[in-house]
Amino acid sequence: GAGVSQSPSNKVTEKGKDVELRCDPISGHTALYWYRQSLGQGLEFLIYFQGNSAPDKSGLPSDRFSAERTGGSVSTLTIQRTQQEDSAVYLCASSLSFVSFAFGSGTRLTVV
Amino acid sequence: AQKITQTQPGMFVQEKEAVTLDCTYDTSDPSYGLFWYKQPSSGEMIFLIYQGSYDQQNATEGRYSLNFQKARKSANLVISASQLGDSAMYFCAMRDTSGTYKYIFGTGTRLKVLA
Image (cartoon, rainbow over all chains, first blue to last red; front, top):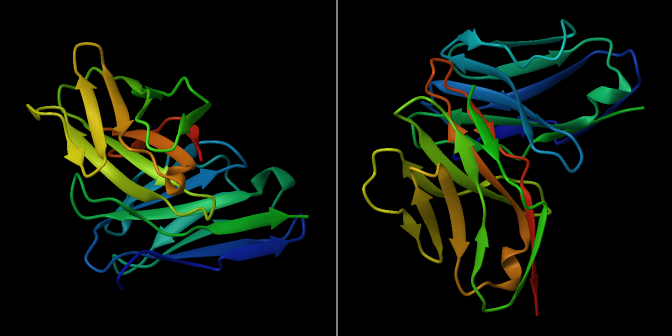
């Protein structure tokens, strides 16, 4: 596609439920990143994919968070047993080169 | 560890004036890249400008320029002739080249352009 696509754009879920967030990167971009942005805060790194492998998952807050990438393309971020502190905007970005780095429009997750 | 610091949580500027948004960074790696992003109220992250650590000249992109002072480890964004549409959150970021390749972001500066 022309840009990084994320779905859903908004998600409201009940505490304790599992959610899946999807990211479709720019075609051909080998690197994919997930970030989290809490209200009024900066961007918190979660995980980085190169192809289908994740050489850096140091930012995942807990074992309730996991992510996978298949076919070197689409990535899914899964949050199990959601908590209210998980409420944030989850941003995905993809990159082909050192300079080129494009963000999706994010998924706004609200845990009630 | 790499770190980005933006010390101005909020800034005001009069329309048509120039404004400088501060960014300092910390890294021991000789090779790195510095970026500025704009995040309007709509939430998308818009790439503005890039500076490589080995670039000899300061980067410029239209009304945006990056005042790169390597010895001081600063990479301030200068916006000339501010427009009302420049009101947004601005993030400074650095590409981590220590092997993990993640981009590290500052906490951002909220810019408000006054008519």
